[in-house]
Length: 101
Image (cartoon, rainbow, N blue to C red):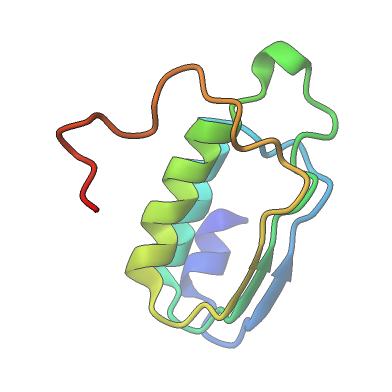
């Protein structure tokens, strides 16, 4: 499905809420899709931890990957990432050397 979404220029809204997507790997797949699809305007990945065991969830990893895709997309105007516990990092999302204020 991700391959088809990458090349579908007509798709403007995608609702993938309440799926077991809250992993770094799923975030990477979605990020690659966002990088390749310049027509997608709205993406809903809210409640993406449903169906996953707590130990398999990686909100921060998911968020990092999605952020990379969003920054490269240019067309996305709506992104719903609500109810995903993204702040429960196992490690910092950036190191002191990377953070710029």
